Image (cartoon, rainbow, N blue to C red; front, side, top):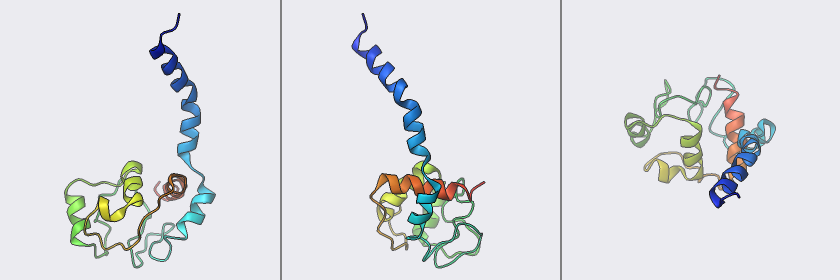
Amino acid sequence: MWNRFALISLFIVSLSPYCAVAQEGDVSAGAVVFKKCAICHIADTDKNKIGPSLNGLFGRTAGTHPDFSYSPAMQQAGKGGLVWSETELRDYLHDPKTKVKGTKMTFVGLKDDTEITNLIAYLKQYSK
């Protein structure tokens, strides 16, 4: 007879392939979401615009892209250990001003988790 823990564990394991696919995101849909960012950022080349280039973002310490004038808050976040990973970027994109209090980025954030997942998939192609 199965106990409750075993049944729940089996259920979670059986869903894990679906969860992994859902978290990968859709690059094409992410390109559409990136249009909201493209006013200030670029991802396919390593040039700064109003905001820093997002090319090679993952693994970069916050506030360290060369030749970009970051806010003291973003520089301090980097000195405090903020390195851009999918998790950190997801938190930041939900609410930039809460994640890095004092950031000069004026974007209010994305509230839709699917949009964020797709945007991350789009940015990951430029972080290899």
